[in-house]
Picture 1 (cartoon, rainbow, N blue to C red):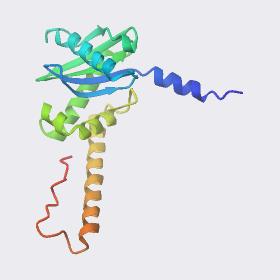
Picture 2 (cartoon, one colour; picture 1 turned 180 degrees about the horizontal axis):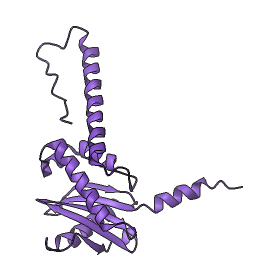
Picture 3 (cartoon, helix red, strand yellow; picture 1 turned 135 degrees about the horizontal axis):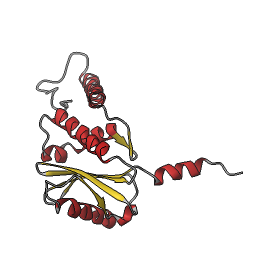
Picture 4 (cartoon, rainbow, N blue to C red; picture 1 turned 135 degrees about the vertical axis):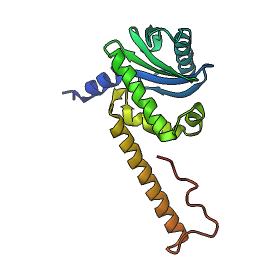
Amino acid sequence: KKHPLPFIINYYTSHNMIKGIIIVNNHGKPRLVKFYQNVESEALQQSVIRRVFQQVSSRPDSFCNYLEGIVPEWGDHIKLIYRHYATLYFVFAVDQQESDLGILDLIQVFVEALDKCFENVCELDLIFHSDRVHYILDEIVMGGMVLETNIHAVLQSIKDQGKLHQDSLTQAQSTTSGVTGGPAGSNRDTWQYNW
């Protein structure tokens, strides 16, 4: 007798509501890419990024922020919902059943969380702090499913993570330098995150 679990796992991994999240600058350079539905090779992934960028960048800012996308790697009926902030496009590729306004709100939550964590986020923050950006995104979306839309809950999780990180650094420093404090000239704030 076959166990039904493999069917359930395959069903959920192949039917993600969010297919991918792509942040690209005005020149098409990817700054964050997260695929929740598999795209086989790196060449195909680059092709998806290029195709998505071409579709959203060719539209004037006065147009609505969603369109029926053509992304063969993710199948038919994909919607590209995006926001253009300064030099960055935040693009969510989703299936037909998703609410356009709901995803626009989700993008807004993500951008607000980034803005709070980086104090006026810019493209360089995404480049030099990609680990933190991925962590923030993982608080909102995981495996193609929305986890949290409340900005206050997201910010609290980020703050808690920052505190845990700082506590672990403090403990590591006290372990290496003994109970009396750090070595002469050590800077305890060198690795501190501004959560």
